[in-house]
Image 1: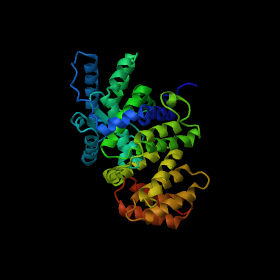
Image 2: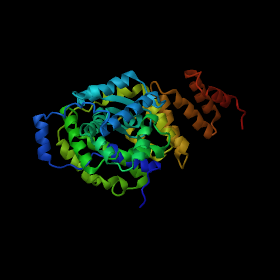
Image 3: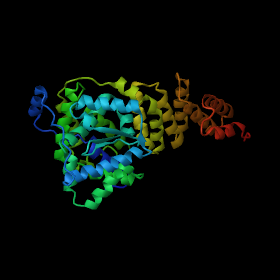
Image 4: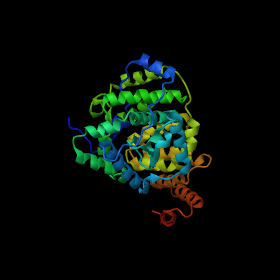
Length: 395
């Protein structure tokens, strides 16, 4: 079977290999001893000399980090930056001064670290994390790769140096196509041994910081559910992604074995509060991806614990409205009516509800929803278009 590294599905497999792949676990008794003993993390790194191969990689990544800071996709939100900074300090306090966190507005599940301490966290990961412990599990795994210097080993081992230059150049530029992003994820796909070592170190940091390590397994289950909706029940059992990973059931069991049945902090409310100012925009980004079946899995999961979440109801209703397959308009109507009836609903829910009424040829209801939308945001970018709906002649 040929490898798909350019399509959306190829990206998801590759991103999972790199970021969600919390690999095979071995020597659990030794891990338990490390955890009980409070084994220290590796020491802080000294910047390598510029004339060494590692120093050259650091220099390349420094230049890309400068480009990244200027990218329109880089989110400059001081409060969210401070929140993520605090999370890294909790996981790896001795290394946190060397780590610089960049939040990227990209509606896909991903996070990665460069050897020079640059960390990228994508908005799709923040949206998909059910709680702080899950986010910490992914970031801890990335910190594990960094502390074990896996990205240096990976790039040193690469045979195609032109590919390295191309991939590194995408980090700061944040390539605009899914194919470019897939190439980036592919180049940073670690070996099974690297994944296993990063798992152990990441889980140790997670539990020593007081988090519930069992949430690491839930990260994988959630992402796999999105894959299954288009890949079927065999998604995650065969193919590219599992060249370096065990089967799904075994993988979850290994993560739970590492967690050892110990509970801990989940921090759901802290994460929710941290992303609240940006969350609606990220929900819109998710809808705009156009992968409606995957988005519905995500929104359904988000509504399990909070069935009256107006922002998520808006997102799911908008997906149903745009997909417009058998029964979708009725589903969209139900979700958007619930969203607009909630306390402090997003103004966009009124606009979407108006569009649903318009599709149903309910002119009076559509006009009422559009008027409510314009009352809330009279200077909205699409205000002229919506006013046009109000004055269009009857059919």
